Each structure stands twice: as structure tokens, then as C-alpha cells.
Image 1 (cartoon, rainbow, N blue to C red):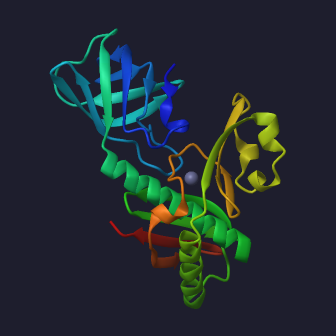
Image 2: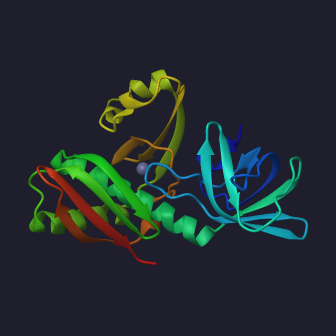
Length: 239
Ligand SMILES: [Zn+2]
């Protein structure tokens, strides 16, 4: 089982860990703890490096496998079980993903608060993202208005708080119901929540910035109809 350091500290760029399992076939190692985000909720997995004495292993991605996080390594030899490693996240890329992920939550929050349109999905890459909504009346003039409103929330410098709650407690929070928390598998006993103070609260496993001001200006670059009431909004951030 890998301790997920990024869940409580999204700003952790480097960490110490120990190899607890090696998967020769997949060319991956499991660590006892990690700051590598293994992907999920529309946020891509981290890339980076594992350092062992003088050797460096490039981590091309990380992935969840049950309670473990696999770190996929490029090159020939893999570090053996018991090896102490120093992990480094590709921070420039990860921080861009944190800003992008938070920007998408700002968009969700505004669209729900002012238009009562709910999210059906989303995806992102560094500095670019898209969200799908059930949003029948979305049109060009509204897109303009939404862009103004999301940038007001960036300027409002709202703090972002992460909490890990027992399942029963999370189920008591009315705001979480709309993010389909009720679809969480039975076996999950804890729910991680991400709250943009005064704007948005979601059950979410991703990494976020600590304040909406870190996101910077958000542009809505495009929108399209996906048929029926389903609409897609595309955003982009400054580098
Ligand atoms: Zn999210």
C-alpha cells in the first residue's frame, strides 16, 4: 500500500521513499509513499525522476493499482526492492495541471451557482481543459458572461481547502450530492473533498492550488454542442 503524500500536500515536489515491489514485466516500481499523482478525475498522471545514489530513473508516468501506485520507469535496470529513492516531480508541468484543475472547478462552481447546469465530465492537459455540462441554453453571449464571471472568482482570491472525511459524514453534505458522490463504490470508507471557499465543493482526488488567484486569467477558447442539452466548454490558461 502506497501512502499518497499528494493528497494532503499538493505542493510537495520532492520526497524520500523505499521500493516495496518491482513489476519487471510492466517496468514499474511500487514505493511505500509517493508524491506522484497517479492520474484520475480528468487530471493526467505526473512525470518526474527517481534518484538512487548516482543513478537517475526517468518516471514516464504513475498509475494506481489497487492501493499501490506504480511508477513506470524508462531505461534498462529497475531499482531492487528495499532501495531508498529520492523522488522528484516534474514540477513545472504539475503546477500547470494544478492551476488547470482548479480553473475547471471554478468553471463548475460558477455554472452551477448561476445557471444550475451540472457537470457530466471533463478532461485536462497542462494549461488547457474542457468540461461537459447539461446546459441547454448555453450560447455565445452566455459564454462571454461566464468568462467574465470565472475571472472575477480568480480575482476574488478564494482559498481552497482539502479535507478527508469519513464516508457517512461526506454523505451528509448536500453540495456533494450533485457531484454524484452517491456513485462512489461501497468499499470506499473515506471521501476527499476539495472546497473553493464560498464557490464550489466536490469529492475529488486531484491536486489543486491553494488560492484561486494562482490560476491567473482564464480564457474560454471554444464551446460546442454535443447533441441535445449536452454542451462542452474549452478553457485555456496563460503559461
Ligand atoms: Zn476535479
